[in-house]
Length: 142
Image 1 (cartoon, one colour):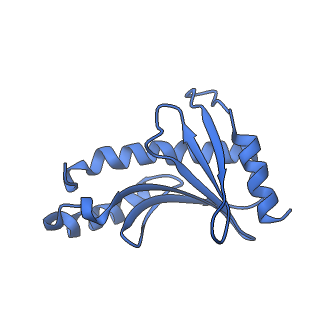
Image 2 (cartoon, rainbow, N blue to C red; image 1 turned 60 degrees about the vertical axis):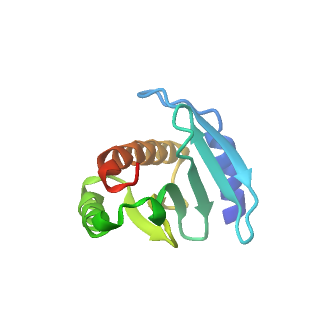
């Protein structure tokens, strides 16, 4: 299956899914990109943190934007970076990164991952996003 076909399969398969344990509802939209298409997953009551999914030959990458560099209290930036590195191990299925001036949290899966595994990853990534924002608010401009 090509990456484009896998992306379409994920968009269709995830749309309308409701998790059994937490009741999270997923909605998907495919956005055409300059280089690759992206599936945008919004979770009911968590719409402010959509998850962006891309697929290539080797992985499915799931990314959520956290905050921009301009939102960080500059006097606390080094402490924030140290905290992000320390939190990465404790946050299952997720890691922190920075792309340009945008801080992100992400997870990656095999292209062979099942829909159930995707639902689990997206649920955990969404939970981890909320935890990170809550735990790290004191490093951000209010």
